[in-house]
Amino acid sequence: MAPLILRLDVTGSPIRWIPWQDAVCLYSRDMIAWTAGERVFTFFGGTCRRTGCRSSVSVNSIVAVKRTRRLRPIKRGVPPLNNRELFLRDGNLCMYCGDEFPDGHLTRDHVIPLSRGGDDRWSNVVAACKHCNTRKGSRTPEEAGVGLLAVPYVPNWAEFLALSNRRILADQMQFLKTQFHSHKRLLSFQ
Image (cartoon, rainbow, N blue to C red; front, side):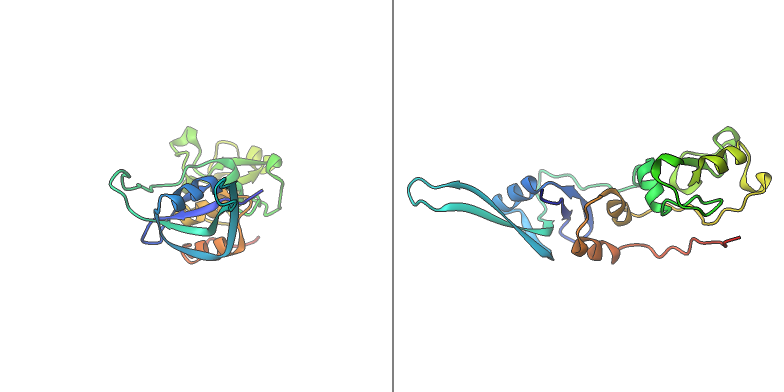
């Protein structure tokens, strides 16, 4: 099974993951501005009846797409918040007790509870084990007497893409890491 291809705009900003079939279409329509990455995948098509040659297309793991008049500029705001990427952002650690848990044992905790006017957004949520989330309840960490081990933050688009792909290749990760923010998140381990 071929991995996803990292699609960039012509300036090198990451846009999204695309399947190899979409990348082949971009190559065939001469829409690739430049490529990066160490991995190159070759995909084979049919055989030409006249020449007997089999068609093939080689696709890089990272492709930058030329601008076209039909495509609107892509607006990249805040990445969508979901539990899978939240838990990955927090390293599958409970941000209160510091223990590591599988996804099924973690919950989304609102630092400022929704019932107290908090928002359901990256900068107000952390991964928490069920025990700590229940113990904290609808209080702030200070009111509940629990320390927050790291400051919640909004991942940039490159970080979100890295979090959202389970089968990211080393060269793709290396490229994305160059665009990560440096987060000094850890407050203290008690």
